[in-house]
Length: 288
Image 1 (cartoon, rainbow, N blue to C red):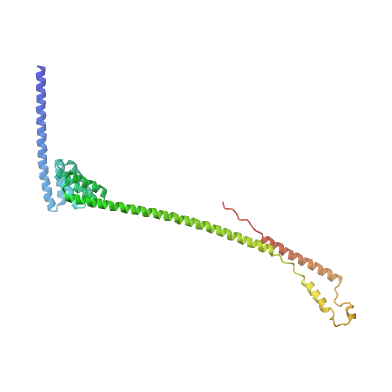
Image 2 (image 1 turned 180 degrees about the vertical axis):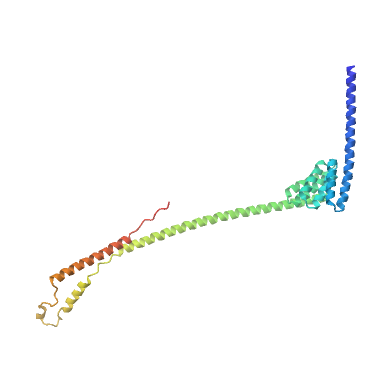
């Protein structure tokens, strides 16, 4: 008895589940039909260039039935034509993920590739076109777009490589310039140091060889000349040579003359000592 009741209960549950599934299916089909009708209205608004109402209708259609692939796809095309590529990509992706037929999937991924091409994302465009060709390998337009995307990608990679090479060359050139500047600075410092040493050497040599002999006392020279002038000519008589000279110096005058000569000698010696001090070599100070 209990077994019969259990079997009957299971049968009732199965029948009820089937009815629920059928009910859900009928509701989904109804929602899809309503979504398609709304999509049709959106298409009409779009033809009339009424983008605002068309966008609103497409969004209502999408929320009404996720199975309606046409609604997100058509809205994506509307965004694409208005160059709203980010919004367009989102709707094409939604359509591609929900697509059940290969034809619908092919169209969605083909247009996703177009969005990537407009955004100059060539590597992503290549992958999108490949996915579209997997769904429909015979589409020549997609194949052409794939070839173009590959060509643009290669060109972009070549330009990046050339830019990198230019950057590397500029960096090497900058390093060489810095090395040359450092070398020039070192040579300049060495040259200035050599010039300074030569200058000090020249000053030292001038000081060493600048010793002048003490000047003879002018007064002495004058007296000597006086004496020579006052000497008799060779034609004079011999007895005139033995006579005392009238201008002969006294003892006090000789003493004064000697003191003047000593003072003059002292001044000359001080000048010589001063020149020796100025001409002495100096050592360069060390930098910190």
